[in-house]
Amino acid sequence: MKIKKIAIDISPTQDGNALRGVGYYTSNLVSALQSEVKTNPKYKNYQIDLITTIDDLPAGRQVYDLIHYPYFDPFKLTLPKTNKIPTIVTVHDLIPRQFKKHFPVGLKGEIKWQLQKYKLKKVNKIITVSNYSKFIINDLINYPQQNIFATHLAADKSFKPCTDKTKLIEIQKKYKLPKKFVLFVGDINWNKNIPNLVKACLKLKYPLVIVGSAATKKDVPNHPWTKDLRWLQSIYDQRSNINDLILTGFVPDEDLPYFYNLATSYCQPSFAEGFGLPLIQAMQSGCPVVYSQDSCLPEIMDNNGLSFNPHSLKSIQKALSEFWTKEETRQKYIKLGLIRAKQFNWKFTAKQTLAVYDLLL
Image (tube, rainbow, N blue to C red):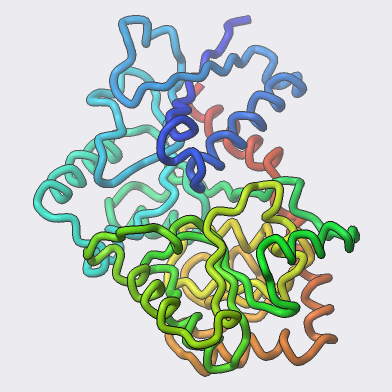
């Protein structure tokens, strides 16, 4: 029986993406793929090798039957110059190209985009992380929809309801968290719509906790990409009540699940997302979710939370107040979220990914 050799580029786990969603996706996907290949007789002749190059492999490249690049950067030359063997690329999203006005890149960036786009259109298959992203990719680069495959992400098993009150109190004291608060986890970019979330919470007088290293970055450059981050830091510095807006900075993986357990609700106010992993982390932890009705978020939530118009402060406020003031409604969506979260797991993602591999092997 011929061994089918698959190379996966794991450079996103070893560079600046290691602590971001791309690194998380790569490491969890590789682990799930290796487990599936090892335990499923169907794949007993599959061999997965891990590589760390983003350009042409050495002369021995032909020993591989397939190469998977789990990351695509529109503005960095992350794809090989030529595709000598079947190639699959994971494109998480193309938000900076979808909303070019908010993500200007200059002449060099535009040239790199054209080079990357040309290479991407030559690959055999594209994997993305939502059906929404699938249609955006098709629209922006005119890549055939039948060769784009959506595979959802999943949350780590550490995200679960916590009944250890002592541990919850410990985390609450460690980060000086209020008794009730709205939670957001992630970067601060235009597509995240953080200004509207902050304004809604300040108007309602609901404490907002923002988790992530981005919010507390120092010496942020004056650039269009950092406009919302600079706005947030300005509001943070000007506020009179130190408990209405809390920027925790980086939170280690072992502490993050407790934030979801302590939060009154989790809010994802985004104008656009490729997937939205915190939604799964929240639901899986027993935290009710309020979310934007735009992009892929309704696809992920499937009505198991409360949606709102991200362009309307009144709509955001109404959704947030439902969980803040109505405990019965909150408990209803906690239960629904726990059920919905079970639909996302890395084993299933690995099987879907292997099914795409099968098309080329």
